[in-house]
Image (cartoon, rainbow, N blue to C red; front, side, top):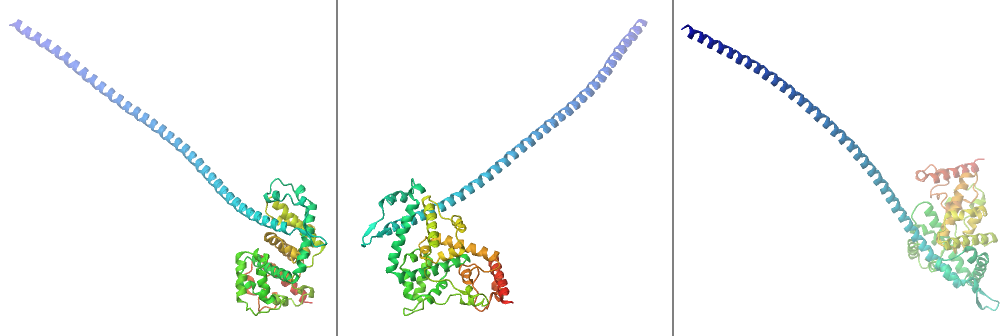
Length: 431
């Protein structure tokens, strides 16, 4: 029995020891599990943090790359835009230049046609008469190269258009002109007078920047007969005018009665304007001389030099411009220019050269009036060329006109000249 009890006690001890061992191991295993769980959690958290940090770095790098790429793209876009604008400006400039060249080409073509026509007319007119009245052509040696002049190729000014050639042209032309004028003295003189008056009207309106209308030519009906004007419409001078000018003159003719017999060389159309400065010297009241101005050696030389300029520019296939005529101011006075415009030689020039000569006179008169303390020319010369406006009816002088509303409507240059004229009026009127 004791043995059994001992065995039981021993078994209990063994069981208790085994239990304690298991309990101890279980406790240790539990602690190990807790530590392992804690370490796993810590590792996971560190992994998460590391991953977030890596993602943040990647995101930052991507943003930086995107920003850099955007800046580069923006820079490229700006450069392309700038280049496009530059190319657009170049294209617009080229278009403008092309249009300018087309206009110049058209003008040159017109000048060439005009020169060809003039050369053909001169070829027919360049004849001289011997003492027996036989018609003899000019020396063929100086005209045999007409085809070269016609085509403007391979020419040398000094070789082909030398001074002897010009002199021969001038001499023959003068002789033929004198022969023609002796047979048609009255008719040619009247036509030249009418054309000179028409040119003055046109130049005056153009200088004022206004259109030429039919009413501007009504002054012709006061100074010339209806028959004179009809003869003028059949002349080369009339045909050289623009279509609208010819239309206005033809309309005026229809309004003039057929039995009209107006007196030629009547008083100047600007008699009211002349009366406005009744205190000026008598020399300043002389109106423009009508008809052909007597040709003098000085005017002949001037005409010859102008012809040389026109022919030279034509051979060089260039248009005569104002700057080509300005050197003449060094050798001739403004009075020479004005007298020259009243000659038949001036009327023989082409429209462009006539316009430029009148423009040269206009500029010279304008500067002369503004810079000097006297009026070098008579008042009608300034009015006729548009340097000073016409004195409207109802005004006795320019002093009254300066105080009117019409004066304020003038451009600055005309107002300045009228004010200068008023000072001259007061200087001459007041003792």
